[in-house]
Length: 431
Image (tube, rainbow, N blue to C red):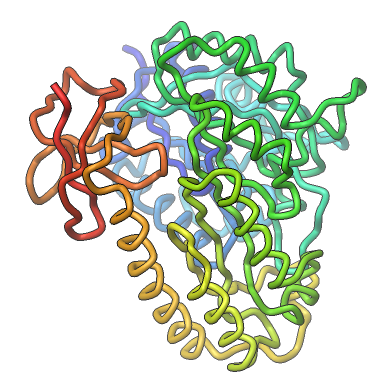
């Protein structure tokens, strides 16, 4: 009888891509996939460690797997496994702990029932061919891994290693697989996407790669960029996006703060004024661009005045949404040793204020698109209130689309937005 397995994933789109590859490899090895809530013979938890909360969520998933089947083999991989394997070894029921450097050998280790794997001294370039997790309609395409920036708060360079890029010829080969499978939106992703190509022997950058991809992308398929550092949004990139409707008008920028002193302490090489000017430049070239921003609240030394400067900047910027989260002390990072740590209660207050602002920004941005036709990709989920099928606009906001069914999933439909309710755009298909 075939052994069953399940995979749970936390964190970024790179983790999602790698979980899909692990799933595919296990199926090829003869295992049978079941949803994570099911009883399985093998559980793989692909962890995240970007904050203390994701560490907690990882441990929750591990213990849930052990409760579902106390006799199952439980495998922990991902960034938490890479940076803090000792903490995971304290959990009874965990059989294997496999860090990111050992991910290429994960299935081999499970199949061979091997002991501990020694981490390779050089980070591997782990770019498996695309594979799809059940229920996904917008697959990720991993083109880069690692980060060399070492922002003072960030554990990611230690968890993911240096920048490694997939050569353009292999990017196009992997892209062709997803095109052949019939997907209508493909998300280019990496740990530090804007650093793409800096490690390759032949000169290459993200803009050059995008131009090459667009030459090979058939009509009716669109690209989305996952996240870009503010300093890496070039005029070349904006011009490319303005001229090509195949690239979704959406930029997600992890600005982290709008206060100059906090940005300096974070090792972020820009200022609040730079962000203000960047947003102005983006919208001058691409007026319908959805600009989203990551904002970290409660970084050590963030006074009330520091926070207010960030809040004022964000209030004044015509952006689409905010992703707000509290600073989390990560052992081994420079900021973990900083004094002036902000009390947890004050972090929560500031997070609540920015999340309230986020709701206002989302509604104001979506309102601009009422009654205007949008190309919406339909996904495998339904609106909880109305039961309508859910989709995603090019500008990254959710759309509940009436008069659609499961047969329309993974289709690009022209939709007329008719209203906004609970942070969701509602619309009707143009027949």
